[in-house]
Length: 213
View 1: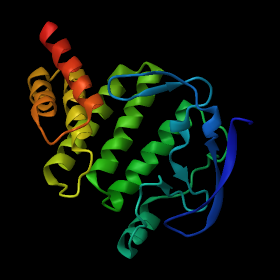
View 2 (view 1 turned 180 degrees about the horizontal axis):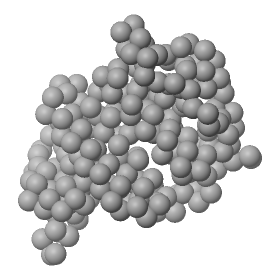
View 3 (view 1 turned 90 degrees about the vertical axis):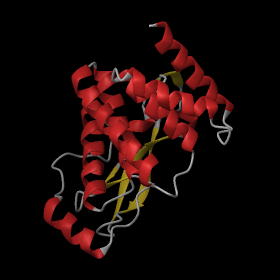
């Protein structure tokens, strides 16, 4: 497991300590990146290890989670149970999907921000894409699109608005909603407050692709 190392963690829910595997940054080797930022790696995929699964209580969380409040901890204890599977070692695609789905469950119970839930759904869609399961991929792309939309409409503290608008355009494009895609991509291109040249360039490219179809 030279490409992996064990990281000491403390569960945000039950506060017990455990170890989980992560990919060494020196071993990251990117092959390509899709237009919705799905990244393909040579060797171990770091995204497979983003979600930490507590072996003591079954709580799933990423580094972006907030510690659950008392009410959420009670709900989690009543609804979330430890897996019989071991998530501490090397993960395959199936374990990565299960881990992310558990993180989604926990995020829903403790009412995490929409932007966090959107990113979790999008990663599951990427995992299904790698598996070639286009039907499941579309289901999770749609959920990601819905939560990105909610984040854009409701989250007053939302950062990186240009990226969120671009993703709303790109996810709508992938789901066949071309009119909605053009609206979001046009906002990225024309909004003077968005000063990310890379995102603006990508929005122009996607907009042009839709117009040429």
